[in-house]
Amino acid sequence: MSKPPVPIRHVVAVFIGNALSFYDFVTFSYFSVYIGKTFFPSTDPSTSLLAALATFGVGFVMRPIGAFFIGRMGDRIGRKPAMLMTFALLGIGITGMSLTPSYAAIGVAAPVIVIFFRLVQGFALGGEVGPTTAYMAEAAPPHRRGLYLSMQYATQDCATLLAGVVGVLLAAWLSDAQLQAWGWRAALLIGASIVPFGLMLRRDLPETLHAANAETVVVETAATSRTYLPIIVFGLMMLTAGTIGSYTIGYMTTYALNTLKLTAMISFGLTIINGVFSIIFETMSGWLADKFGRKPVMIIPGVLLLLSILPCFWLITHVGGVAVLYGTQAWMVILASLSTTPAIITITESLPPAIRSGAVALIYAFAISIFGGSTQFVITALIKWTGNPLAPALYWSVAMVVGLIAMALVKESAPGKLAPK
Image (cartoon, rainbow, N blue to C red; front, side, top):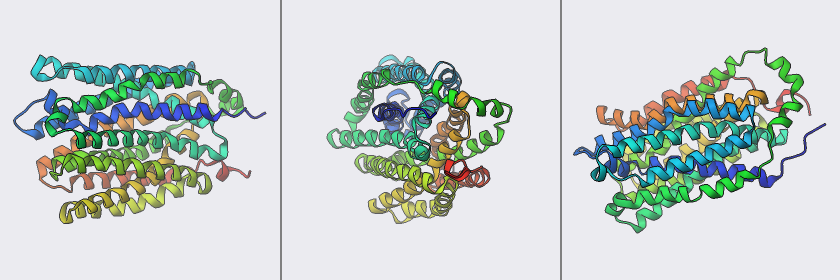
């Protein structure tokens, strides 16, 4: 007997809550130049920026820990309580960070406090992905699972878009001095203000864990004796490539401000391009993955992306101009969105419900914590040490080779490709 469908309003509630969770986290990245000067003042702007990006990376240290505790909580107690906990902790972290006094006001205590709240954020977000991804998979009809799971990335990029719009509006309305003094705090507080709304949305969700386990009890008995090492390894490789790509694209705002010396208005415009094209093509990728399978939708755009990264960055640095910057950004975002989305679909489908939340959370968190937290710091350091503005492209290209190897070796997981309907 098939399970009754989860009402669409509840599915949308998870999508919206996921987007709100990530808004708080990515906003820090977009305002890292200003945050660096506030909490890590230095006569060398690059040193302040590196310190801020290191603090951005600190949040990733806690993500595997949050994934372990909250992700497993999602498997043992339920998806709903795990999602409520993550959202409440994210609210505490973002509010505390936005209200922390500057280094000029309280000295060394300021960066210490900021780092603490960043750790709280990292712990919460580490536990967010597993339960929400599991919920999306269990709420979806099998023939629409790719589309539903694509919302994990698409809703994250709704957060990117919202953060970009906020950044552009603040850059248009405020002077650089005002952005430095309080503008970045306003952007963070916008995220804090919507936390009660997110908690309200998640409070009334139906639980999917027990129904999913009841339906798969026979499969579970056989599946638990198998090793999941291949999907763990391939999953880490695919998500590593996607993570480095995502955070390289996300770094373009800082790259435009700090390396290309463009205005804040132009630089924050990149986040809007990133958000709009990501949302559209990640959703399209999920739809295509349901229609044609996960592997071709990963591999074909992935190869095109590998061939495009270096030429795009060369055009940005040698030809220049806003049109070139925006056009190359859009092209890379389109290909990355199409290629990356089926990876999380494949990983989730390849794991049984009893361990799905915790395993997805851990695989995702380790890829993100190791490479997401370090990517922007590494890129900034490479540009500073080598003087080569193509450093981001070289770093991303190596990651894509690793990801494509995994995409070629992983088993197809689309239900329609495994058995006749």
